[in-house]
Length: 126
Image 1 (cartoon, rainbow, N blue to C red):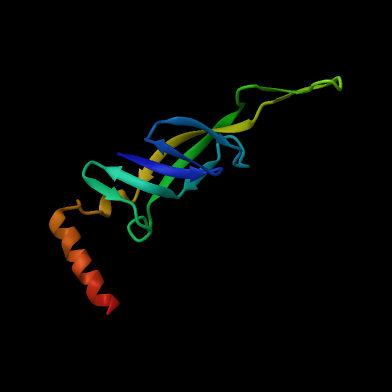
Image 2 (image 1 turned 180 degrees about the vertical axis):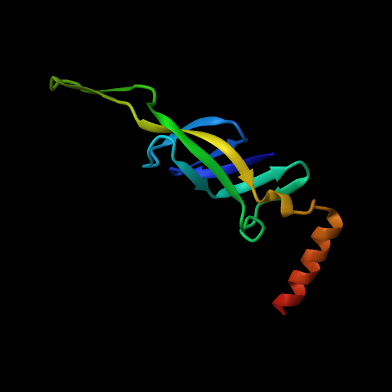
């Protein structure tokens, strides 16, 4: 089972037990977070719509903070003796994914179920 979560303007594919570095979340070390998933895949079960994802939560624990890779920049303007160097390291939070919950309620997707939903959806729009 895996999920796709969104945090800090980026999306990450996570499984239980994964550690990942994300933009600062503003929580202390050891704090528990609940992240809303964008997608959950459990074998043949795929939850992707907001209605299907209701009540589904990815739980994570803040392990610590770190810094990203060094980015070196250099600006040079010819014939004017202008040179400027700069560097940047992004501060990141390290999260450990502890659980993906709420995905057990979904039924596997079949072609018959998809066709039935499409027919029901067409009737409700009229």
